[in-house]
Amino acid sequence: EYMGTFCFAEKRVMASYDLAIHARWVIPVDSDSDNSPKVLERHTVCCNEGKIAKVLPTKEFESTGCSAKEVVNLSEHALIPGFINCHTHAGMTMLRGYADDHPLAIWLQEFIWPAEGKFMSPEWVKLGAQLAAYEMLKTGTTCINDMYFLPESAAAVFESAKLRAHIGSAIIDFGDGKVGKMVEEAKEYVVRMLKEKAEGKHKYITPTFCLHSCYTVGMDVHRDITEHNKAEGGPGVVYHTHLHETKLECDEYLEKHGQSAVHHMHSVGALNAHTIAAHSVWLDDHE
Image (tube, rainbow, N blue to C red; front, side):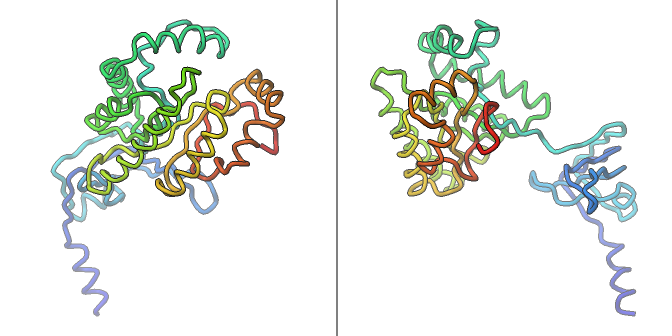
């Protein structure tokens, strides 16, 4: 009798949400017990305060008297979580189409780096980030891991666009004696952003360490940032770098250092669960 009364009362509860999305298919990017992809047909995703509160069959949503301030009907759509772009240079959108089809080393050294040296400014990075944010949000990307210069300019764009962004101040040694300043700026940015996030600021921004690569940043810097991260940033701060992107890069690094960049990074503790290595297509089985 008690359970019957309880169930009767449950059926009369009319939940209210900020947003309800009725979709032909909801694909939560999860698996059933037999590891088959899970596809929920004719389901509703309910949200409150910007977060998913419940996913239930649309018939159940309707039959139990649920309501929402905003209702979106996607009768012939598949609803999936937002895409995550694990490696971006949003500000570089301004250089799209510039000097295509060159080997990476030539493209960087003879075209991209000189162009960045000429045009780099907060406004230039802002414009590139605005275009990148528009394109990514329009095509379903809702979270990015960005590496570029002047991160405050891009972060302001991503915050206003409500695009979740892991972002840091890029470190690269151009041989001009400024890498030490870049390292200190990167450390200061992470420490300051973590403090401000703890105060409730930067809802969509998470700071990271961005070291361009092992061939453009000395291993002493990789070691320094790794130790700083352990002491100040905590183990959860992303360590973002390019690694083993081309055969030439790998061959030259091995010849110069007597070991691969992967092994070298591992030896200083820079490879862990929070390391994101981009373009790592030249790896052997052990690496």
